[in-house]
Length: 424
Image 1 (cartoon, rainbow, N blue to C red):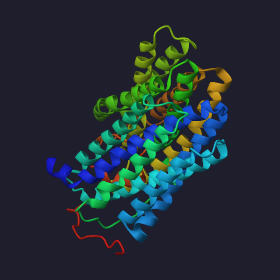
Image 2: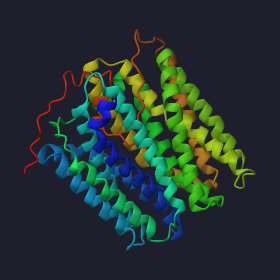
Image 3: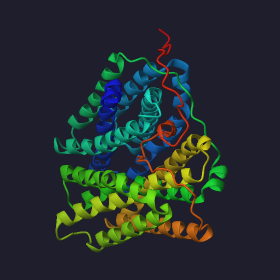
Image 4: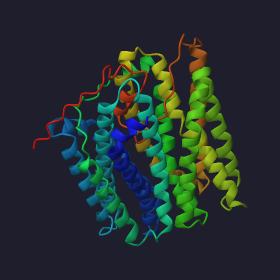
């Protein structure tokens, strides 16, 4: 494991900086937009542009890498992402911010494509599971760590956006000075949504619903926190609690789902999430103790965020190994469709139903997920003869990360050490 980390330190260091900046920027813009007087719906629509741009990035960025190489693509996208961050300092309307969020989503998903394809080039059958686990922890932990910066300055000021831009720019450095050779690039395959639904209706439905829930969490949770009177630092801590809750329970729930029918685990997690969400909603707009809110939101994240990974594992159980990479790539895109819808729905729920409308929305989405899992079990009671292993995934992953799944047949041999021609 240590040798693997030594060979990929530049990728992981750059990824940490990207995730810190991305996590900070997402919550910061919600708070800054609210301070500028943007309506909740406008904030939701503006934030929905990010996953829409990321969806496009997942489709287009692989072609950029195959055309001009890993390093040039990374440098171009990081520079553009840094510039789009600073545009928020000179404009104060939701339309321009939405355009910048779409550009930011395109850039960040493209950056993840570069990192994931580079990791795939370093992966062997022996270390793929390790690389995927470390990558998941860095993505989730880095996003949560970004929330800590919100206590440094007011969201209406200049400092936090400048820090975000600096972090994105500095993320270039370890990649550019890395002595490792860039690997050959293989564009990810995909299968159609209709084919995926035929292979695993539960996975497709669950991923879509979980995408909506995740999109709502990362935007409307900040609106809820601000509505009940929390300051910027406390808002960031609440979002971090939700994110870290999801990271903490990913592996235990995955391990449990390896031992029993995954649909039971999905049903239990979704039903538990409904109970927690309704309990938080019952606290009203003025909760008696804030520690209850933090604990509840952490538990809510722990029961909601891992469901996508469980759905992906359930899908893989019904596939041939040769289908895993293509099907997982399509499932990621379905997740992004849900994430695109989530911020707007979350903002509308807060506007129409008050702060606790956010929790009512999550309860509704998780209730639908639980009902879907029960229905699918009723329609197909048989359990696959041999389940694979659940792997932890986040909403930031791109279709290329499926190649790191230890159950997939890629790569079958040690990585090629030949340097990629970067056009120099």
